Image (cartoon, rainbow, N blue to C red; front, side):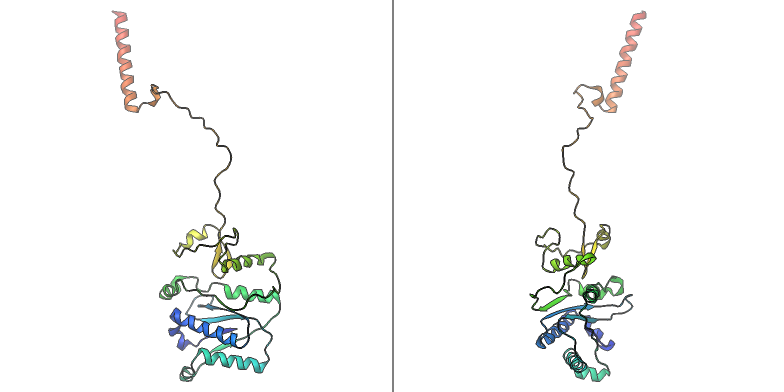
Length: 256
């Protein structure tokens, strides 16, 4: 399910609290109608970020809805998420798209689409980016303890990593994740060749351990304390001058 809001009400939807309230209402509505598993996630922009275009994506269980039941569901969503007085005042209503599939391939395509990042450049709307900083976008509701319908294979294995991250577990080490909210420049992350596992999460390569094994001895030797080479250049020049004077005197005395 994809719910798009009219242009006239989008200024009110720049507040993260409004976004959180709307998605919560949608999840509660679907749960009351018998859906056991509901996942919601906002997309903020289109492909190129021309303007703020909030639309709510919903993934849920259940079967195919006949036309009458679908119309009833859409009507319930419209009444719940957009007051009728506002809809009548602006002469517009929510646009709701609904699709159903039992194909694992199609379902995986939807998961990839819903969990992709839509706000990819802060210059698209910097005030909105600051307002949404720290906003927890993807939310689950219901009971998710059923047996797996199918398993991820091949290139889709990276989404297994995303599921572990959602549970607070590191996908490689299996240890609990300790989150650090300090922002990191994207250039530093990109330099590590990160792997996109969806929903705005990236998996970095492991830190290379220090070299193991016996340290190789160097060819450097420790000079004795009185060695000429341990002196500074100034001291060396004084020593050389003294040697020259002594040599000159020795030669002079031998000829006299």
